[in-house]
Image (cartoon, rainbow over the protein chains, first blue to last red):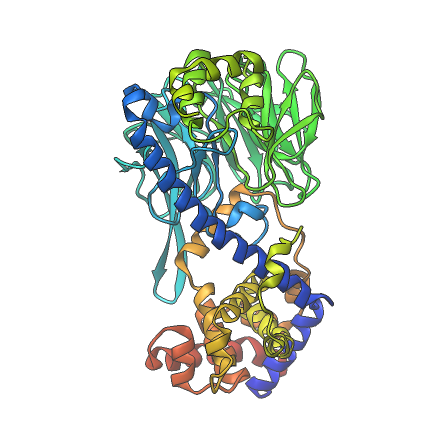
Length: 407
Length: 169
């Protein structure tokens, strides 16, 4: 047998020849370094902003009703993973993801504080009281590492964390059922990746996609708004190669293909039940498309990924794939016209509520101390999107005693 | 990806750039052998150099900054959190572009033999046999006991031998 060092030198030469270093490798590193450095500063800034919001919140506590203190109670609060992901797409080396909530103008940033190792894949409970998420950990087993992840829920202020699953596999991507009684999730505990369903307290965990001779993986579940069915992707993970859109009854029967087209991932059923939006295509050319369930027609929406329906099913919140990421809103009456809300971050989501009066009240309360009428206030545009006129919002703000008292 | 111009004031030491250019290729190759993935190797290299850059005032004056670099890369590689997130993203994220290393690794007998080892065996063998680390240095870089390094190297060499000898006979 040749000398081990010679073998390894040969292997090293072969390996690096197969994956040669880019010619601009130091420039690439400088870009990576700047991005990491910037995000460290942003993370520090976010903490400072949270503190500032907390101080402001305390000062205004007398003005708020008790339920207005919940991050999920204020209409179109969006969820965002800043941390390192502030400037990264999901394929970059962005491991320090964290989840914050904020209003659509970027104000009231609140960290859902629970450790540093959460990932995206959050799901709000329909009543806005809790958030389901998964938490991954590494397990050292003898000479090898395995990974495991389990499903948890917590209150939307980051307290009352409850662990719902505890098994050696990867339990991922929890999604509350529309009535809030169950959570669907993806798990590989049975040997293949499957969609599972459990009660919200973690009991009655059932493998939903237990097909005969099952060699394919089933993942990315989404509930129909009546809770009677779930759509999911069926293919081999990692997604993208051959994943197709399937649907199954909530009792595990009647599973069948819904869209016989490859490269589907992250489907999301519209709240009105008429359409399913999904990602399609290879990264980074991924696009958001939409399947009409009565017509069977597929509509191309926009370049982007991770679509999220607005509560009224008229708009999609979409994460962007170009530049530094970010997210925007597409009005389905005008597909391909993207209103960019933020040019960093990704995996944004709507909160479940969208009541106008509450939105206006919370808007001006949250914006006191800033200039809610400023030209860069995307929040106003966001509320206009939700059905209120800009003039009505401005009038409500200007006429409010709280706003006058602070001018 | 746009670069924040405000950050151009951040000093980029000429010494650090030389260090980067001297060490990047070999670190990348080593991580490639250990992880079996050019995507993962690239991530580890970027992160390790970032950590070194942050501490360059201190690391640059060390007797063996290369050792610090490898220790940092291996720390990142075995980070429980990073591994868990990576595993999770495999089922959730859009797929990365095809790894050119995978096709080569399938054809090359030494790379196939390395692939049959555990990641820690590969790390121990690469550090000691390829880079000439002694047991204590490798143990320090891997964050394990020297005795464990000896066991890992022994098992790794045996695995390599078992794979290679039939073809050499």
